[in-house]
Length: 128
Image 1 (cartoon, rainbow, N blue to C red):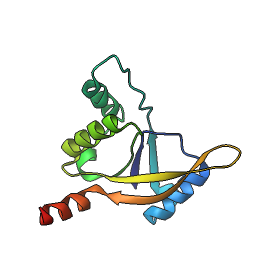
Image 2 (cartoon, rainbow, N blue to C red):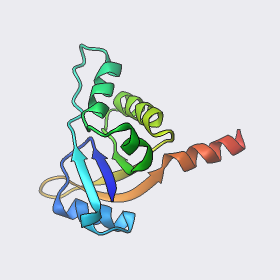
Image 3 (tube, rainbow, N blue to C red):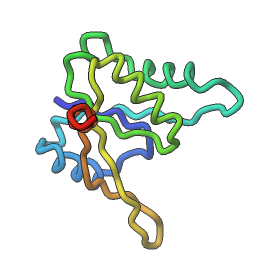
Image 4 (spheres, rainbow, N blue to C red):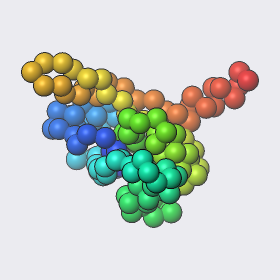
């Protein structure tokens, strides 16, 4: 089972199919947890980011042992905070999913890739 922490738009049936394909899993092997990442601009962001991450309700053991994939929010300060917090809870950087907008009568999003941030970090350590 892969836990997907979704901090952006709710996923459509088509999005779930795209994500399952990217992860080489069946849809029934995905557990999607969705939370709104709307922050109050008048309040400090770090406590709000901790509250957002903690709202998923995962245990210490789940953070460290489960396969967790992040669909990050779109506002970069929140992304930076969330990834920092996840690194602290998981002991490594998460893998992220990303989507691209598709135009038409209405805008929709198509999930097209994965980035393992821990792999990126490890490669950067070699070349520093």
